[in-house]
Length: 197
Image (cartoon, rainbow, N blue to C red; front, side, top):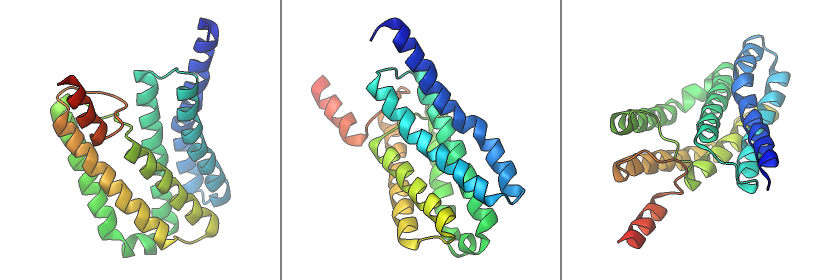
């Protein structure tokens, strides 16, 4: 790929990622104005852009630290807005599952504080488990908004995989003395260490 095409691909892919960041405040406004139909459709587009920007970045080989950071911010904002939608639209479900959500928050804050202590910033590992967890979260959240009720099997699968992903990130922060982006997972860290030895 020549330089002009690569630069164009870089801007297009980062533009797709930026869509999620720019749309997050709009989604919150729609949610609190009770424009639930528009909210769910724009949220679906946000989740779709999460799938497509990573695929395009790998296909055109235009990954970068900036792109990785933007992707993480976009992912976090999209999930935060979607979970806010759960709180607004399904408060009874949140009350029933509060210990699951509290457990997730504890793991998330443990991982984040540990990363700040170790690296001075948040992680951008983008492990395979993190990608799987994000996909399952997206499926559960979209099914909930489009069917009008939380589907418990999808919820529990998404919660368990997300918990495992956060535990893996805590272990990776412990294993990796320096900040790194795009780590596939614990197995690959140990595999790389064996090669280096």
